[in-house]
Length: 264
Length: 187
Image (cartoon, rainbow over all chains, first blue to last red; front, side, top):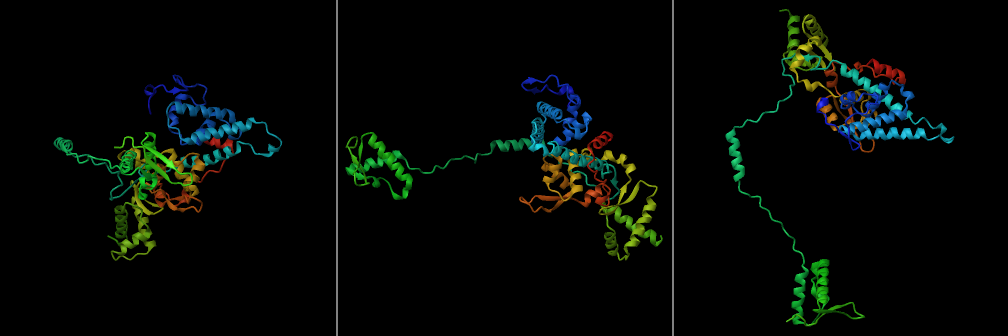
């Protein structure tokens, strides 16, 4: 446990928490000790109820909720790891509190007290909590009694310490630093169809023939990508005025006609 | 040496050397391997005479869930405790609550434990209990997800000097709230 002096002042809602709230059921100094010892939100809640010395059945949900949430915030501010379960409990309490604030309509009158489920769970938890305390107090092997035996006890295995000399470390270091680099790497590029190349290809064809059909600018095996690249190349050429794109009204054939510009 | 004294010594050597609880039937088998034929009641008699022999010593014969074993009396435990790794026997509240729920409600799933404790049961706790051999897998519940069911082991009882799960302190009834608090106060 860290001593008070070692604890840094935590940030709480943006301000340094130089002073812990003093209106809590548990004095904050004591809380710091308890916090890490709680086994869960039910434990905290039971502790708060116990501290307040109230009957679970008379649970003042409003007050206990405020207190609980204050502790959650405090835990958070003290950077104690908060399990989501604590937040679930905070939400449950807040829900019960809000339900109790709403005036009940006649239809809802028969509905049970919103606290009853929580109280049932608290009582159930308390049964096992107290049983676990009894079991903790039972004599336990290797704590309260020990075997009388010539067989070896189950001592914890010690981790074997490193057995290495400074010279060996130096040799290993030398070995590592002078090791040739076999790990050079290169990337494999998949061959992609290049629009630039297609432009050159189309131009070279147009040198020999004045007009070609669009389907002659790609191979079937190039698939969709081939068509896309060929179309982009054709559009590029048309944009720069090297070719005219011609399509007859009644045909869906596209033609590329050389304008003889830039083609020698 | 009389025959019965010899027999007690034989049983003593088995318990002393075994370092774990031995059933009467296990002792019988070991003796049979030495061509000593004995029925179980005779072995029990030998054990009883050993108990008498140890009456004024620091050692006792104890019957636990897995049989009989020799151990140092609890009243002498304080002398030995410092020899043992201090931390190995400090069990967290969370772990004790978990094992208690398994003990009284077995077989249980992790979900059952979480319902009561209101907090997620960490894998670490379950593993720690499995490592100690305090709990074991007892199958899977036939519901969606088929969650694992856990129950306590004989080793758990052995380690607490108990013969049967019924020797555990009874699970307190859900007390009316006020009394529950009074009890907390007392505890």
